[in-house]
Length: 81
Image (cartoon, rainbow, N blue to C red; front, side):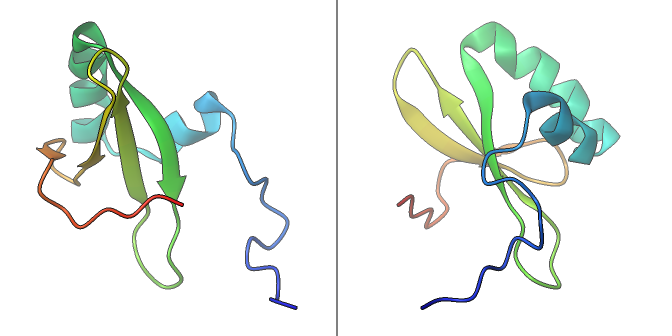
């Protein structure tokens, strides 16, 4: 059996918790991106690394990463399971 790695954190955090993890550049970008059908979908928290924020565009059903500068990265090798 695989050991649980979340350390008591919920599998799907509330949107307010996700927003609290963003830096100021990401928060500003998120407010703008939401006007173009993007939403904060989830966050990955790799061990000993910065959180990775995954965005979803509801209109075109595409996923992208929101980098630390607040820019969308469409070219990443994002694998969702």
